[in-house]
Length: 187
Ligand SMILES: [Zn+2]
Image (cartoon, rainbow, N blue to C red; front, side):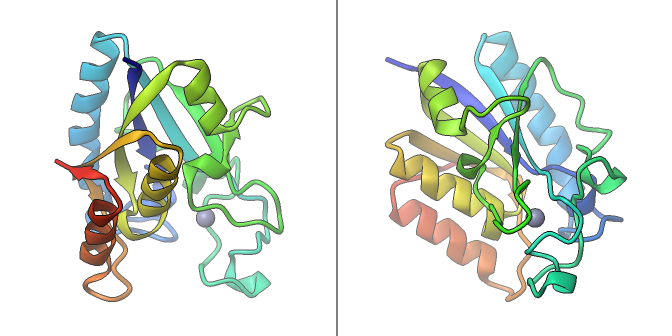
């Protein structure tokens, strides 16, 4: 049996109320995630955060013809994890750092300060089961969950610890239905 890991997706200032691309109630996931993180750490399980780490004028920004306002530019306030998200020892995955490539999924990112991608990192840590929390249900959480399933990881979405953008009102619900259909547990 492999180990379990908690993956906390993009709980960054720009995705929380007051940020450039705020998710409604995005900050409400924070106390829930903190509890999960404490529990995981106390059981010697890995805690991993992902962060959008865009360069200025990233391809996903409107100014470059993309769908989103400028957000999570590396080193700016919007890029940092929300200050209330105090975490035990954890690993950091950066994604979306190439100017011309967008990345929603944590599996498109690499361990901070290295070239190791998330999948290889999990493999190294002997992780075969992941719990996924964070922002946003219908974008980066969805993409991370679908990639985890593709990699054959047992995958659970922590429903109280995710929130969605809902460009269309049902987007989060559809995303959760899709994740379930493809084999994710939702709890
Ligand atoms: Zn982004």
